[in-house]
Length: 428
Image (cartoon, rainbow, N blue to C red; front, top):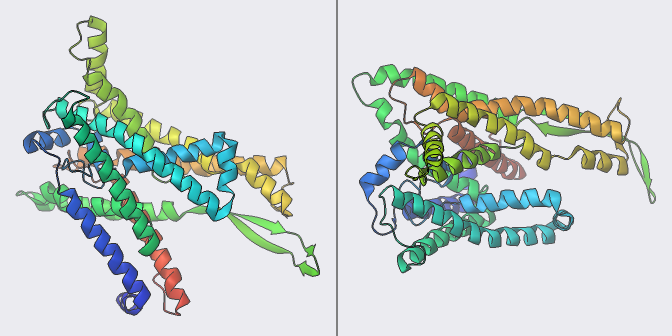
């Protein structure tokens, strides 16, 4: 492993990509420490200590939200814009046709995604500013004041800057740039997260179970994340001009976690929205409105009523896993593609039977992936119930899932480049 890493670093182009990626990540970590003006650090610490949902959002923002920095929104608006564009492709035929036009279509869709990121950043920046001002982190200002406008422009500019840095990594560095930025934020928060665990007289009693659980989680994440159902597809021999193509058998890989971490992002957004809106009505003069707002704010904040919150969190992750997988994989389109190209699944007739078979298989493997993602999402609450001192731990299964996914995909890209140079690969 070490020898192969040295061989990779000796290759000039790979070394250049690695150093470029490292330089961009250092710039990102430096920007994390540039706060917006007039921040009450004590109130900011209390806010994130008592709100696990914000801790999860901070993970996806790369760690900038907990520092109230100019990149506090992170790449969340860009991720949301990408998700919206993917969903719109399933309902708008023009976008679906554009996605099939090769590089030109991808560039146009990427441009639409960037344009959609700007209003989403403004809207999300305003929501974060209201949350921070309501908790005394920043001074409360009117919506159309110079202070509020400058704050929203700072948050939006920070998101656009991170989006540009991520695209630079994807273009000139190694791996997916947006994923690397989130990965760097998670890694940067590890010392702060595990600090309470390794401190105190009984630190060893907490640390050993924590390490065992972490190793088991990493192994499970790698196993499930790389798991797939390989469906054999046979192509008959065909005449193309003067050339006869021989019959061949290929495989259609269906991943267990086809939706990735997107269902967790959806579930966090759904849970955070009503709890945040309810806080604005807890002092209402209308009795039933105040009672409903108090009930929602006390039971959906991830701190007071953990069993109810955990059950809703788990159910939403399972639901959105099925929801997003339905947009990612279309059995009808796959069956039609196989039929047009002379492919068929052995023992299954082309057309409608193939579509029904793919739907049945997808639903079965998605069930396992959905339950796994739901377990990963609520894992911090399970761990806090058995390991003392981890009640405020936000570095849970979701973070490990992101880190493992980024590392595995980067290793695969590095493996492909190493194989072109006849080096011994990382993955055996």
